[in-house]
Image 1 (cartoon, one colour):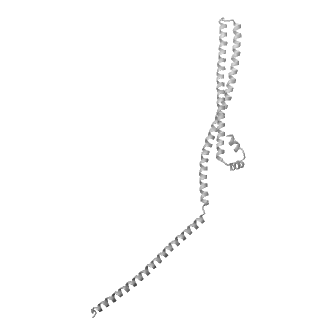
Image 2: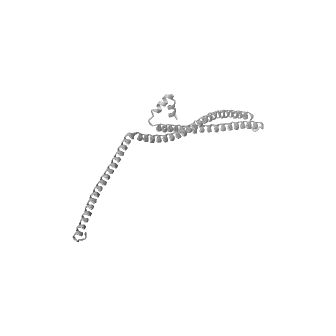
Image 3: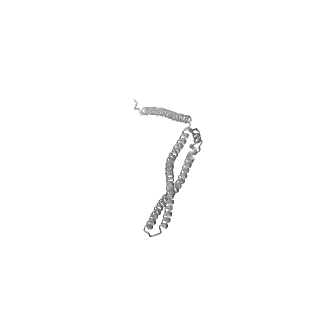
Length: 235
């Protein structure tokens, strides 16, 4: 708590500047929470001590008040005995006077103890309020620390992703795709060209075979005519 008090007691602009210069806000927050927990421990110890003194004062007040009543009763008892001639009146007066003096002393001590109890009770109230405030602040800062850690993780992941995206050369990627497209189109055209050449080669072979077949058929026809002539069948 003292840590944050030191931080936020500086001017508003200086506070923003100090926060901007922090290398690790999570460590700062964790340190602040540790400081507040130390303050809480100190306040709890002080509260226990003050409560103990308040209890002691209350007990003292009760004890002194009871003693004062007891001395007053003894004084009355002494006077009654003197009245009944059970003891010397002068001695009874002397002892009764001493008893009343002790009664006054105890009443005074009881009054002082009551005043002390009031002061201690007031301190207990103040310490109790301070403890509640510290606990509230600790809960608040622990919740904010949890949120801060989550935000750091998200921002770090987002930063890394954006950094990777920023490092991608879009123009280079498009250029590479265009080159690949040209290469594919070139390969396709080359395949089609080889196909045309293959078809042309097959056509030439077919023409040659056809011509040879026609020559073979003509020769066979001539051979047949010659055979018929030799046999005298053509007449």
